[in-house]
Length: 247
Image 1 (cartoon, rainbow, N blue to C red):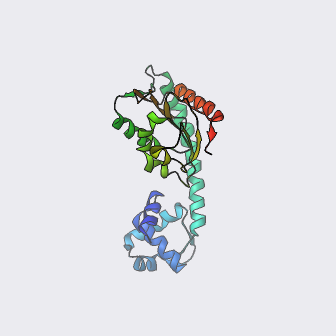
Image 2 (image 1 turned 30 degrees about the vertical axis):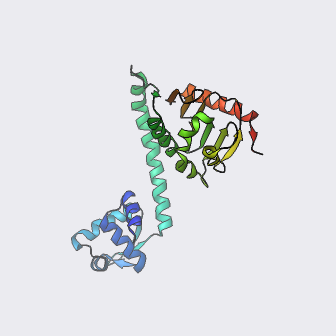
Image 3 (image 1 turned 90 degrees about the vertical axis):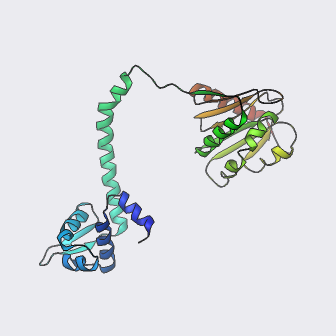
């Protein structure tokens, strides 16, 4: 049994002895407790406790008789049974916890506030951008005029990692292609839009990094403020609709 499978079974609630017993039954098909104790190297004083636990958890069945015989359920059947049991538990936990604890959360006087950070230097902004991209699950929207290219280009390895993934990547550049912007071509859908005053990167409608300035970044802002991020996303798509594809 591989270490990966052992970890998975442990996370599903099986002990080391239970894993040994189940694996032995998968190979043997049918066994007494005494045989299993000898072959799976489980102390006889523990073997009935182990088998009863496996049966209770839905991994094996037993057959009446003298001696009692034990045999495994198929992994597919056992996993499905455990999944259904966990879903039932989750529904119960969900109802109980929300009923009692959610009102406490909603009545508290101190509310969580969205963050707004201002970066004065590019290194900190680049580090934050890499963190954003590493957390992306749905889409990444990039508006990269020349002032934003140094920051965007510094995260190129993270952008390349989206190739072949389910994350949608839209990149909007301004002006002609140069060495710094050429590396972005082919990473996602690329369009060109002239006259962008600033740039930005929006991830999953959860957070945005805005880069403002003319000849260079004079102000770099990160925020997860919902309204600000939604506005940035809407403005990006407004510009995207009138942008043109590369010739």
